[in-house]
Length: 379
Image 1 (tube, rainbow, N blue to C red):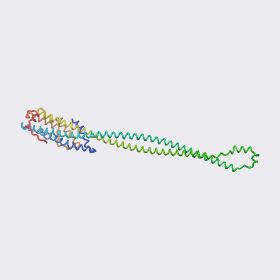
Image 2 (cartoon, rainbow, N blue to C red; image 1 turned 60 degrees about the horizontal axis):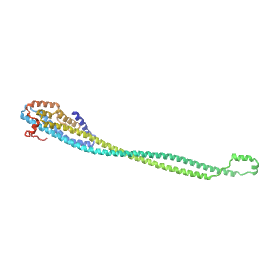
Image 3 (cartoon, helix red, strand yellow; image 1 turned 90 degrees about the vertical axis):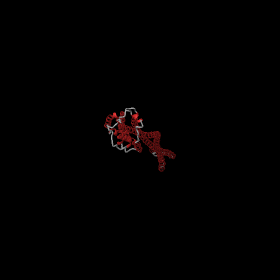
Image 4 (cartoon, rainbow, N blue to C red; image 1 turned 120 degrees about the horizontal axis):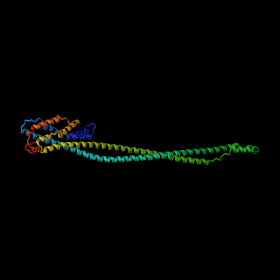
């Protein structure tokens, strides 16, 4: 029983931590305002109107005084039961509010999970777009290098064509400057040597081919045009890659925000479920003590035994005392100026044994039914 309450109030401790959210503070305030007052009244009444009177009863009292004492004990026990019922109802209202908020949070989490999935799909698509754009850039870079090589080759061919024409023109100018010499000398003297010299040492000049230069220039112009087009495509693909990366960054930011919001909602849900469990345990224990008192007051048990059950340490005192200690520990309420111990209950049971012969010889429920004997006032 005590362990049960220890577990319960460990959960309640979350309500008093300095790092609590506003929601936690609100529920702590609700407990302080609606649950603690009736509980406080029940525990105080139990001590002042039941425990202390049984502890200080004069065992030499006559039957009339004993009957008055019994009536007082019955009224006090009914008041304790009534206050515990109030505490139970207040706890149930808090639980109902929590149930509604948990339902709304659950729906919000479902919607947020859909947003996370949609954001994740956007990120995945952005990754695919980046890969495709990167492939386009890589292909375009290869094309630019190929076109650059083709342009370099065309420029080389054009320069070679220009050099060939220049060599042909230069050769022609040298032959015109050389002249024929004496016809006789060339035809008579050393004709064979001159023929060999002209053929082997100084070959005939090439024909000036200006058309070759034009063709080389055309090929070079075409190569430059295709090179520029390749550069433009590369620039476009690079711009598209930058755009896709920017879109990916936006999608990733949206995904991060969606996940962050989902974490916030999930934490809120877990926090509320923790409070829901705490309130459920509180209701269970209040009802347990309340039901026990009600059963005793309605039972046909012999008066002495009934009074003993009303102050049962295990079923009444210990649970209420455990709640008291945890409330004080967690700064939910101030300390009582009394403590009901097991020794106190033992002394009371001893007094009951001594008063046994003077107590009314009827069950407790019959005493309560006799309205003329009991005039209870609400505390």
